[in-house]
Length: 238
Image 1 (cartoon, one colour):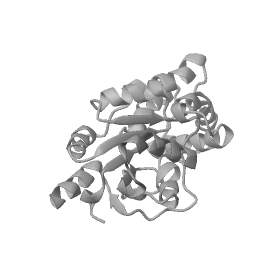
Image 2 (cartoon, one colour; image 1 turned 90 degrees about the vertical axis):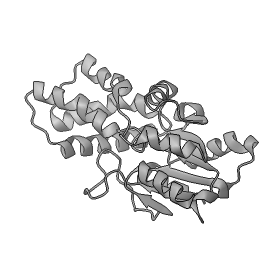
Image 3 (spheres, one colour; image 1 turned 135 degrees about the vertical axis):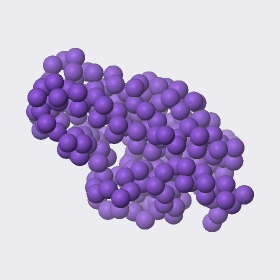
Image 4 (cartoon, one colour; image 1 turned 180 degrees about the horizontal axis):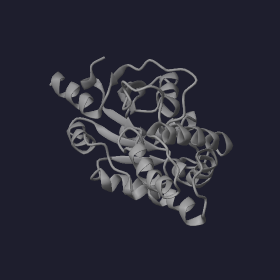
């Protein structure tokens, strides 16, 4: 199937379009330095990935911004970070400063010329509002964990999102699901019959960084290291 045959692209947001790892590092590293704790990048990211996985298991329907305070406390116990109330709450409040990847805005503008673009995120509406402004409002529709009442990888999230698009007449074969996270997105989307595009932002690096590790790595239909590579592939098809 050619990329030009799809009609709708559904996107994971955090990790695919928004560089949450940079946002987490920008928050945690100054705190660690001030506390006299020496941590490298991978220590911080792996600790966050483990902490988020714990929170997904504990409260699977909760949007991830509401998981951030307990996740930070798990990280703090592991890494020796301070746990005063302002610092713990500040982790969630750092979300508006999280940057988009350098290729995100331009690539989405190019893709929107050809496809309907839909955000599918484990964020709440508050966080997605900030992310959408950072990305210059690229989406035709946006679906959050707050809307659905559950988080990916729950198949119900995908069912809800498809239901939202059904008045526009889209069939399953019209969709390409674009995501960075094997854990939250690629595996479940593939099992549900979606064509998938893995944007492997950590291509060439070991492990899964700040994302929970999947039980298995699912082979996607398309595989790129960046979003601009997807946009370039679409443009080459003409």
